[in-house]
Length: 491
Image (cartoon, rainbow, N blue to C red):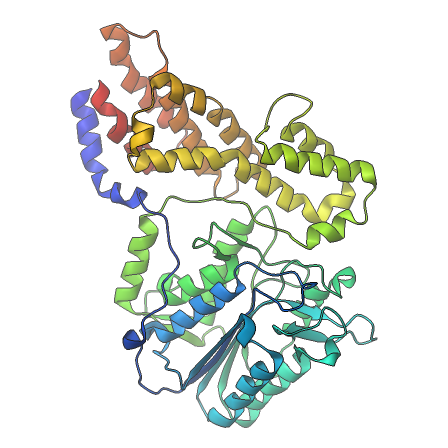
């Protein structure tokens, strides 16, 4: 048994380092690393998380998303843009006046066959009091209502700029927007952010438009994507850096990024629904792949464990609960409290599972059902994720814990992971990971149980545990290697 385990460990040894670091956002490139070479690409990148008006709900990562996209444009893959070709406006810099000035400058600079990129991440809403319900992108200095009073950028004006660039300047225009976040805005009662998405989706010329979601959907952001990003922006940037290059020709086209975003965003947003929307010529080139950058990105991703974490529905939660009776609201907050206090499956009548079962079929909570299911599943697996991270890092405190202490801490993990997997369903991308982790902790708990002291009984442990780990053909190889690496030496 020692020999076979050692051989197995050797065969999987190359995957060892791949399990020890989490994925980090790409850093801002230093000025000296950015090419000063002038090009035929001009871009304005806008990201607003912190709004001036306290009644406009802040976002968590819109500014980070914008900076990450700017980093792509600074890089060789994005054209090595310099300060003359790229203007980045985040938070307090992104006033309505500065946004208008930056977009107006594009009309003056861009010429025939130049590429123009406009990127916006922040809030979008409509003016609900008027018949036409015009849409707006909310700048940093936007008011919480009466958007026509200033502090906003009208979608009508944006389309005028885009059409002018495309039909008059004959430039190739790409508009990227992530403006469908949850938030209690002036137009929330009529689906303001979703109506904004519908307006943005209208195409008046041959521009390329990339939207974070379909009309009627909301865009997610959370810690699991790059340590804190929007799901759309995170996968968009990685796709443009080369992960979307399906045919390996060294370029990323509109069609390729469309397929990549649909595969990645749709799967990882589940059970919420978020399907990015792309309009335009699918053969249009968006990026040139830099082999060195792509290799570094793949290496970085290989070092990280898959992560599944909580996402937020701030603003949407307030809007939905305001329409419900007090009894349902009470159960809803009881569920959230039980999750926060980690009373997941017991006591029977006062745990998250009981409250979830009670409210999950409530029609009035339908807009939040995806959040409830996803966040319950995320909470159920969170402690096991942290424990696994510590074990993989050979954490000294973890290593010196007694077998009984480990058993007491980990004994509920298999049940929690099983329930998390059930909530997400077998078709969810994270289901095999959850089941594999359940198996690893079942094996771990088996190894810590007392009472098996004879040589014969101990000799059976590895084969029994490996059998548990290999149960089902969807388990990931790194988890089997994890067991071999950490525990084979005991026998």
